[in-house]
Amino acid sequence: MTAPSPTPTLPTAPRGFHVLAKPSGPICNLDCSYCFFLSKEALYPGDRFRMSEDVLNTYIQQMLESQLGPEVTIAWQGGEPTLMGVAFFRRALELVEQHRRPHQTVHHTIQTNGTLLTDEWCELFRQNAFLVGISIDGPRALHDAYRVDKKGGPTFDKVIAGLNLLVKHEVEWNILCTVHAENQDCALDVYRFFRDELGAHHIQLIPIVERDNDTGFQQGNAVTERSVDPEAWGRFLIAVFDEWLRKDVGTVFIQMFDAALASWHGVPPALCIFNETCGSALALEHNGDLYSCDHFVEPDYLIGNIMTTQMVELVASPRQREFGDAKRDSLPRYCRECVVRFACHGECPKNRFTVTPDGEEGLNYLCAGYMNFFKHIDAPMRMMSAALRRGGFADEVMTMLATAPRNELCPCGSGRKAKYCHAN
Ligand code: SF4
Ligand code: SF4
Image 1 (cartoon, helix red, strand yellow):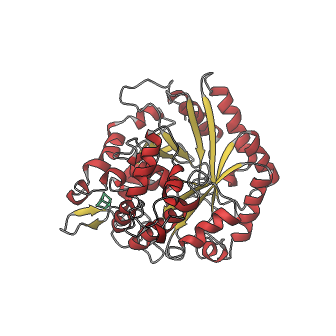
Image 2 (spheres, rainbow, N blue to C red):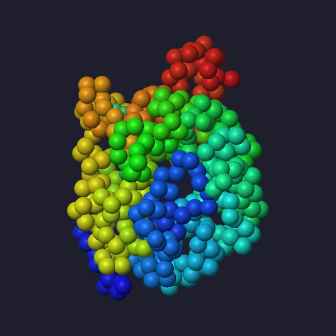
Image 3 (cartoon, rainbow, N blue to C red):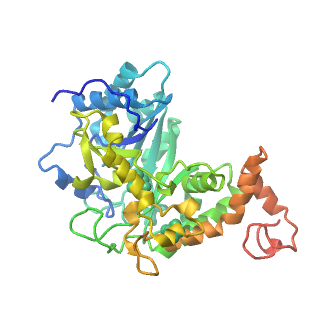
């Protein structure tokens, strides 16, 4: 295959966009019960699922050429990307240096289950300042409920061994925790385990909403029993938020709370699910196929292949822009009139398969949880935003709450007297 000619500049292209590259496609050494990627093997029957040197070179070159800003992130995901071996990533780093323009700073991230990490991996990560996302669902029993190996066996010890290696080599890491039927009612156990036992400072919480169908695609409106319950999702977020608000603002960073604060502060959150539109976070398969989003690696959302069409042309294409705009344009009236729409925006379109109370289609399955969560955090978010506007820091909220007059209503909005709530 011949690579396309140099990257054009297109007026409709975004200044920057994000690509999750899957060098080993959906192939993984584990068999997590809820994984939506394992079923994607069927998209490429008989394939070896290894990104070739040609595709790797084209991807790196186009990615660096098409980003107009000075900061570029090269993000690897899977399946399990470490199955590609260390040599593949060394080559990727060489290609980055080859194609990087002088003004560009390149950040490297990788999402891994951690079970295959070695000293060699960790040295590579540290030397090249990788940010490593490690998937852990909580303490042993909660983690092992669904995150199992190919024989159905537990993986907790191997993941923790991988994390310990990252810590030993002083690699920057964060936690990606999925919330599902097994851990949805254990928010504080999960959060305190990450904070107190693992020493986590950055945490991503991802709700598992797994469609129950035979296609493996985002179709139908039934969910598996592993999926998180909408109300429980809200309770989980609220419980973690309340603990974080008491003790951890400014020391533990929870991506969802940062995104919410951005919304309360009037700036676009750095999390596509809470933006008004999307379409700037795409997924690249091992063979150069580019899909609209990591959650829509399905034939209907294949927008082209970077070996025949420049990536930036695909990102700027009317089809991809329609995909992103549909997030806003397909919102049901119930969402359009919702008091927390500014923060929620109907969350991710992949989860919009239920009906509103008045029967309109397209409501997010997780709506009840988000509604409760966003209403619950309103007062503290306003306080944090006000602190930022004054030139202060968000963590001042903890002092403001702790020193509130004890016999007055707590400013957190709970409706309880401060002495029974946040006041010392
Ligand atoms: S479909 Fe969902 S995950 Fe994908 S870019 Fe849009 S909001 Fe983000
Ligand atoms: S909370 Fe529910 S109604 Fe409000 S914007 Fe989100 S999904 Fe829509």
